[in-house]
Structure formats: C-alpha cells, structure tokens
Amino acid sequence: MKRWIAGIFVMVLLCCGGCAEKPVEEKVKMDDLMKISTWVMDPALEGKGYWAYDRDSYGTKGHWVPNKGEPAVNDEDVFREERLAVGETRIMAPIGYKGGNLNFTIDFEGIVTVEKTEPADHSILTSFEPNLADQWIEETLITRNGPCNLNVFPVGKNLASEGRGLLIQHNTIAEKEYLLTIKGYELDGSLMVTAELKLTTLEDEAFPYEEYIQETYRRTGGYAGYGELYAVGENRTRFCSVELVSYEYSDHYKMMEIFG
Image 1: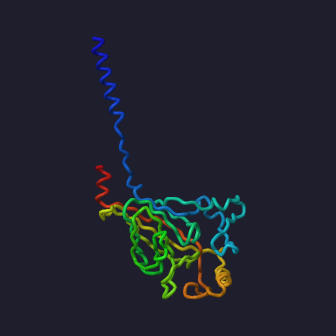
Image 2 (image 1 turned 90 degrees about the vertical axis):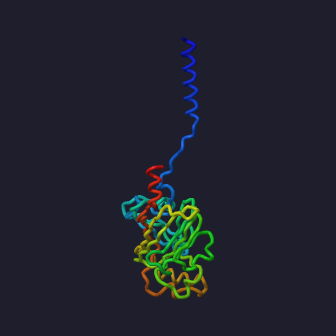
Image 3 (image 1 turned 180 degrees about the vertical axis):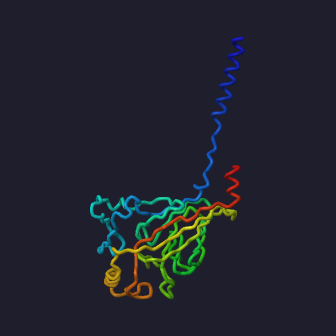
C-alpha cells in the first residue's frame, strides 16, 4: 500500500514538473505595438520658468531661468525623451534640440507611413532619418520600415525656392497648427494601427528674432538674413506643443486582442 501511494506521489511530481517547464507565452498589449516618443519638458516645470536664448550658441542651445521663488534646475534636467500618451499635450524641447528640427522615435516592427493631413502642403516638411539629403521632396506621404526616426520641420508657410533644399532650422512661425497621421502596417500591407499627432507652434517671448537674424547674417558673411524663409517682423518661436490626439487599431486587430 505504501509503495502504491509513493508511486502516485512520484507521478504527480513528474507531471507538475513537466507543467512548470512549459514556456509561458506573454501577450503583447496592443498599446505597446507602436510607441511614439520625443523630447519634451518636464511637466513639473511648466509655468515655473522659461528657456532663455543663448546668444553665443547661434540659437541651438539655451538655459533654464526659474520664475521668482522657484528653485534652480539643471539645464540637462529640463527636457527628457518620453513616450507620448493619448490626450496629453506636452511642450516639446526647442527646435534643434538633440539634432535638427523636431525629432520623433517610432518604435514599431513593420511598415511605417507618415502623412501630412492638415495642412497637406509644403508648409510642413517631413522625412525619416538618417537620410536627410532627400528629405524635403515635398511628398504628402512618406514610408519607411520601422523602428525609425522621424524628422519634422513646421515651416509655417509655403516656400517657392528655399523649400526645395535641405532645411535644418532652430525656429519657426508661431501660432500655427499641424496634423500628422502615422500608420503601422504588417510587412504584408495589413493595417495595424493609426495614430494622429497635433503640433502647435507656441508664443516665445524669450526669443529675440531680429537679433537672431542679424547674428545669422554676421556669422555667414552676409549670405543669409532676411529673405523668403525669414521675413521682417515675423512672430517666430523655438517651441511647439505636441499631442497624441488618437491611437486606434484596425477592427481586425481589435478582434485579435479580444479573442487572442
């Protein structure tokens, strides 16, 4: 009897051991299949200071100036790269921070398309990095295999000649709004996810535009200054806000999440 009970006990242990050895399949959340990240201001600092213009850096850098009564903050702690969340409006790092223009990281395993949806013209330019030499071909829609980096310059106006070449800038026209639609596809072309980004250029009282133009003219030996891109008296800014307006999966993949 004791041998019979011991035998059953050994069989149970073996069965349980076999079950424990089976790999556990982790289900990937749909919201994690395409992640869009960019450099944004620490939300705890919003409204508590401003990013000053550094005249010696030719517009590419700056430093944090806290409001009266607010604590000092290290410049490197003001902006950080974060994943965008639906419905949250964030203040982006100044144009040209961590590279030229505005930069986004799209973490997606598949085909990525970016479409200019409003306005669908040359007043906003898009390209995938690192091949920026052919970026401003003025197409409404661009495509790249992900993961990838997206480069965006919100020009603020349609250019007749200066928009035909490579534009790497540190400021733009304030009080403009743009919509971009980002889609992720499987390699066979099946649509998986659609996201909409809204960019809004902000007022920037700390940016001395006229001084920037004069410094540009001086540093380039008189080859740059006012022109089609930079006009006299424009309200220009270094800053945009960004909002992930929507993030939707195709009906096919919604069903996969429910029954998968």
